[in-house]
Image (cartoon, rainbow, N blue to C red):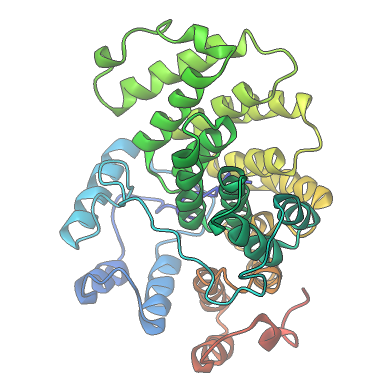
Length: 395
């Protein structure tokens, strides 16, 4: 992100699986049976999630064998199956979700107060994300605030770190509405849209960032006219070339390299993407966000063991980084190390109980571990909490 589909790169979740897709073109009878019985709703019941987890396990979707040799044919077949059951293409490229609406916290201990922007930024930097979100919402929605645009941007970054790209996009859009040339917000929007697999929007925001930049705008038009790039592939290649031209002008600036890493993820050139993130890290070696992006890229390129090192670097720099904890869990799960995966998922949930989608990852882990007792404990909980599993896992 989000995350089973593609390990998320945002500063969480690359993600919003590239590394956990079926190993062959033919689905197992279990998968076919699940699809036949599914009623097309976007939300799955606990029983359906468990059934899907069993089907995934049967078809070795958690393995590390990578994509089948004829990957393009497999993806076309998968997209067709998803369309038949009412899930669009299954990849989100041609049928992006509508722009999200920002959902303000139902309870906010700072509501009605005068909240300086710096207070929320400091809470974010300390890793107190729930507190930061409430503070930044107060600043952003205040009628007398002169920092609303920046408050929305920091709010978007906070949601991205909690592995919630939809909320992140909604907040960042409000930041751009306030200041359409907010470079940091445009760059973050490109990352979050990539995590949500909204490729066209990601390209649009990244190119707008380039056009708005006081130094790099000079490369606009150096890779051909936009109207000549027909189709998503051509659009992606044109924007990649623009950023390569911009990178030649970069002096002690990690942003063009980071943007190229995001763009090469869009084109699934994961080795190239990792190389660009490493260049960015040479400029900003203490960026937990860049280490996470590198890890997500390596994981999406079927290099989960390498990804673990990058995620560990991110967590060493920011131990409260929820997105990296969850990404670590996904990498362990894709190596069939389910106990370790569950520990990391539970740690992420203990830091941010609002990351409710992670319970689905846990349920899959329990099923793959053949621990129906844990699945039953989760199913019986009205409002599950990670502390329920303190006796079962160390986290």
